[in-house]
Image 1: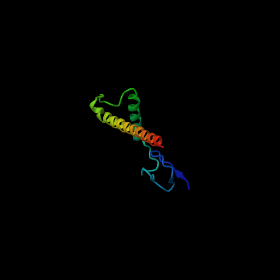
Image 2 (image 1 turned 90 degrees about the vertical axis):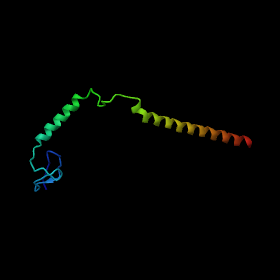
Image 3 (image 1 turned 180 degrees about the horizontal axis):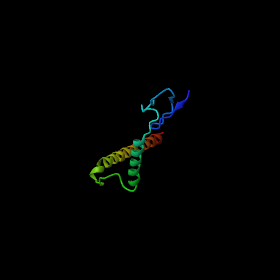
Image 4 (image 1 turned 30 degrees about the vertical axis):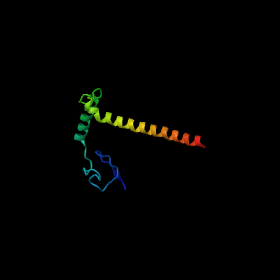
Length: 99
């Protein structure tokens, strides 16, 4: 069975007897000229913005408050784990000293 490929969505599983694309529903032989024009326009935007930052807002301390609080909590958790490890080692060495 012969197949044809849609020029818009590149679906290659369309059989010869199908008049429309299985995926996008476009008629067979459809030339996506407007799609290609829009794609060129979007690509020109991204190529002109390569040197620019996409973030319009300046950095503020208030904007990073969640990050700072999260890092402080992480530091507290790590400190508690280290403290618990040393306390456990101290208790273990005390038990071995009694023997």
